[in-house]
Length: 304
Ligand SMILES: Cc1cc2nc3c(=O)[nH]c(=O)nc-3n(C[C@H](O)[C@H](O)[C@H](O)COP(=O)(O)OP(=O)(O)OC[C@H]3O[C@@H](n4cnc5c(N)ncnc54)[C@H](O)[C@@H]3O)c2cc1C
Image 1 (cartoon, helix red, strand yellow):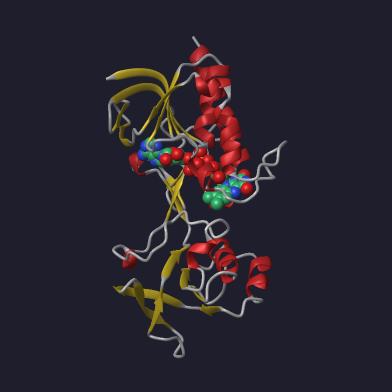
Image 2 (cartoon, helix red, strand yellow; image 1 turned 180 degrees about the vertical axis):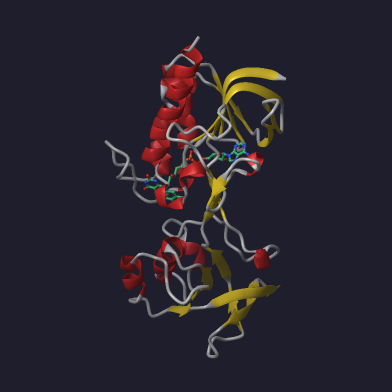
């Protein structure tokens, strides 16, 4: 068992910012990240980032490149390829795929992951959940795509991919969009997008690289099945909080914290998307919360 002062789980913007603040405030920390690289969602951002002042970055990779040469990040104890498995809140034992830690403080910076659709679990024609409709549109050129969801990301994806795909079916569970009106208006200009409201996928079968989606719908004119080359689920994300199942969450697995980012279990903090929910997901907030959490920890360690 390894004792550490601050254990940070997650190497995205919030985890990296927390590591920088540990250095700034004289705390020793270990950062564990399940993948083989830092960055988290930064590696999935293909759009321009113009709301993380003061710079404008062409994409997440460019921002990550700048961050990776930050002197504080170059010297931290970072352990890649190590996944958090469980947390014993009584004994403070934190188990990862490689070791068991006993930290004074644990900072959960584990972000979010896309929701999946059970009926599509074994379907090979499903695009990667982080598929970028801005950077990877060529993948669907002249093909038929079924996009599932009615929020911003689903409608934005349908609009972006309409420029490449032959036909797009947009399957929406509700009877209206949740997406912002600006996206819905843009979508109305795309003649190759067919919106099927109040429609869900019952099951999926595949043959010769094509998927047949069997549909359940309240509308009599909706077809019983559609055929698609690719399926793109865009049904939101959920917080990566399962290692802390006994702690309070709201919405889709987002950890509840106090104003200093501490959970009800005082030695465990949560920062970034895992606590913010989709509506408030942002790089600025992730970085700001990291400062608050680590400052709060540092003030406690100085108390007699
Ligand atoms: C396409 C796209 C565009 C975006 N555009 C913008 C934008 O323009 N401006 C903006 O402000 N925000 C934007 N965002 C949102 C922004 O990227 C996020 O709010 C921010 O990156 C969240 O950082 P995070 O550190 O909280 O989480 P993440 O970046 O999700 O990082 C979490 C990390 O934790 C790791 N992890 C998860 N579980 C475990 C585990 N059990 N053990 C070990 N490690 C684990 C993950 O591998 C990941 O590296 C965008 C997001 C996307 C997807």
